[in-house]
Image (cartoon, rainbow, N blue to C red; front, top):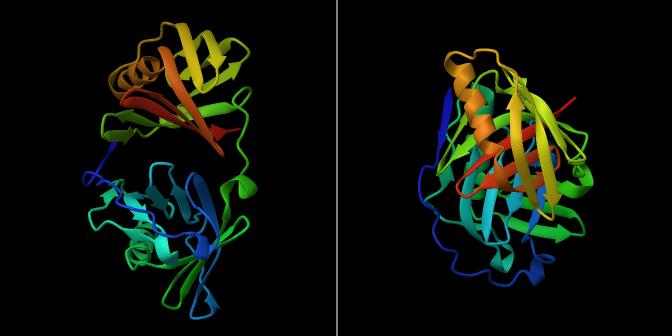
Amino acid sequence: MIAVAAAGLLLALTGCGNESTAGGSLKGKSYLSTAVTEDGKPKQLVPNSRVRLQFTDDGRLIADAGCNSIQSPVDTGDGKLSLDDQLAVTAMGCDQPRHAQDGWLTKILLSEPAWKLAGDRLSITSGGTTISLTDRRTVEPDLALAGTKWSLDTVISGESATHQAGSEQAWITLNGERVTGSTGCNELQGTVARAAGTLTFGEIATTRRACPGDAGKLEQSLLNGLKGDVSYEIDANRLNLRAGENGLDFIATR
């Protein structure tokens, strides 16, 4: 099991400054990289990875480059991104290329890079490096909640998150007022009601196969997350369920 823990507490954002000179507001928007250049030459990112920047409504930046995520309050005033030195960083194991790419992105974000917004296109520049990004909704529209197979990716408990090998075998699909799927060990089915931003799960029934060790723990975590009222949010191909400080993160699979 890979544990993910915050490296520090996030501090309060003290101001946003003047964003108008850089082209508008970044709050509530997410962007995905489409190109990177260094000293005018294209830079290739690790295969099957891209830079993702999410600017939250409460003034934080959540960033990743294919493995660990970085969080910090961010001031976007005067056309610069100013982060707090005490970053909250996840600690998932990465291969060396993605680990190095995490460090590369962190260094850029801590350098107070300049930013410029033009329509749905955002550019981040630090020294000779420019990251070109496009609004996530243009690049990766949100998938539909119903009819999509959502495979379990992460279990959230307070300030920690865990990803267990084989968790992708646990999945759910919602159709109408029914939820079906698998705990990774047993099949499951039950009822679910949908309201604006909320799912209300009824009793979930499963088959009776014994699930020893990690399989049993994974099954219990999934079933605990599918109880009663939970808030939900879809971000491109990801479904996030939350109930208080606990939750489940899923990723769409075919």
